[in-house]
Length: 627
Image (tube, rainbow, N blue to C red; front, side):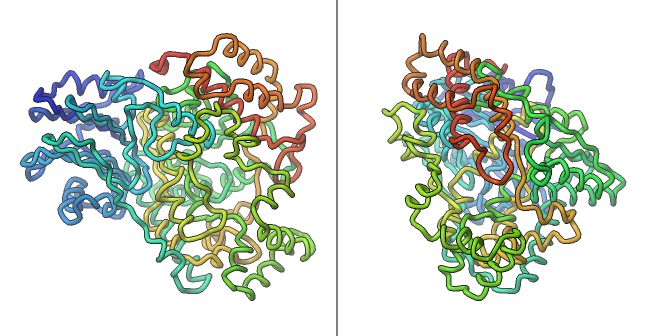
């Protein structure tokens, strides 16, 4: 794992080791002692923080100086040579022609020109700030900029409004007004002589016209996908050190863990699987994650395993300043600490499966009806009714007819509000003065109509890069890298090429992945359709803390800061918290079927109220609290 940083003075001053040291130190958590290398070239300074105990990632090649946090797929070539070759051939589009996880900076000496680039899915983070007439600076993490005093920690209310209402940051948002993330799949050029602000260039531009054009049988698709997934996992395994994996019992993480374990066994090695689970089983056994996790562990005997119980995040808990509502000492932080203690230098995560390898688009039966695949639809509806154990007319009504209704009518009939709704959804918790701006900057819906544009947007312009960034921020606290096999470029390209009817087979969705994993996953995992996650337990535990949460909100309401009032509607947050059941009633609210917990209101609505309360509380605390 590496972190990079650098500064280009625009005012004639020279770069110094002191500035680079401050940037590096701001990104390193207490207790870690990585190697830090620096190079100074007049007005430019670049540095690399290497947690592998090596002085790597900073190189001079043919008139260039390169700072790189890079891991290549399917290539044994020198990363710097691959990087320069891609730039020389493709110019500003170079990020679209490097297969791997990377965040890089390239300084071309003869032109006094600095280039940045980030991989297509944002597996490695990269931020920047431009101070006109003074400097341009970049760092893997925002704290490398604001922690070194190169910019302010002024909060961007619209960015925070988006983050609290949709969980992840939009686009280039960092939460700070003067810091931007270089978006995934983009490049950026800064010329020392130019007074114009830098403008990122989108290099990764998948063509919607090529979506769904693959032709072949279901078995051929499954065979191809299996090979691609196996290669995606194998190429991410370290050659010497052990590897850690998330293991939730779902399709994505279970597949990664099994394939990693089998590869390790061939080399007489073991892997570490980390499972975030509720402290107590929630709901019926058929929906519990534990039996599915146990099935993986029983099948693959060279897995060392650790259960980590969810830690209820309460207002005032320590958070990383670069990610509002994160939790230092929480479950994710504990799992990453365990991976580091195991000796791993990376953790493999199943993030991105729903949008890609195990595509889980909504209303697929209605979608293939609209495409005219009537015979396929008929076979699959009959098979799905049998798989679900329900009469065919119920399968037709639920899977086909209901999704064909207009959105507004469908939501009214179901009594289900849209998440980004300023009356009944998460936007209700924001100050009405910023709701319009937040709405304009928020993500569009994806995976609802399953159109080519939606499917492309899921990778090119949605939440996945921000989700990857969250894990990178938390992993950097332990000197670890995160990698995402389900977001391998070849896997993503293949999934985008598949027509919609390929995602249904054998009476189940998430095809052809389920077929591809025959002989890999335990059947209980491969065929499972639903499982209960941690948010069911959080709903119950927060309900038990209902009075405490309301008391904490009241402390803010008595003397709110200007920023808290500008972002949040504190009265609406109070109403959201009051939707939590009373502690004496909450244990009755156990989910027995897939869908919402009983009790009237969608469970996610008061949970978002708690999240807003936690962020509001964090805004009243110093930005450097994590260090």
